[in-house]
Length: 190
Image (cartoon, rainbow, N blue to C red):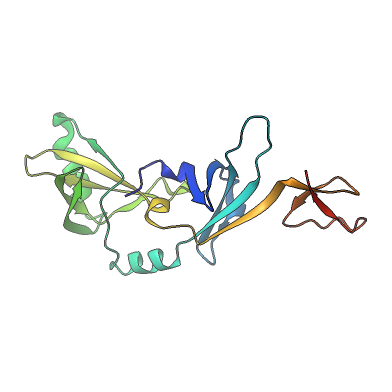
């Protein structure tokens, strides 16, 4: 299972790609439920990294979750609720605002019963994180979190800037949309 923060790195063709930003709404295709994020490959300080667009397709997840058929795996993060807040958290997640789930999952060898069907946590942030309430057999109460990006492998990874190649005429770096009309671009290695 990937970690809560593993969206920070993606492995592709022997390279470690590091998350370098969200880029705002332009990277979220609401019609196709696809999210593209900006990554760079890890290189020595003396070199320029290449740029990549990493895209996830959430169509299947969102369709199955909307019908209530998606089976949530073990959460990525768990935070224990203080004793004086236990009942208010149970009441909150058991309320009519959330659909009941009552399914047992395992987290780090511990059995947790998820109270409600997970819902999106801070949807305006664009991170596709879901959360729910949970209890264990000892009566402890938790808030559990999933990073949906970490439940699925990327749908597509595309290099958008290759800093190892440039045009020997105009000296422009190779990009996936190299459309400089004045030059016929003859790419060479840097």
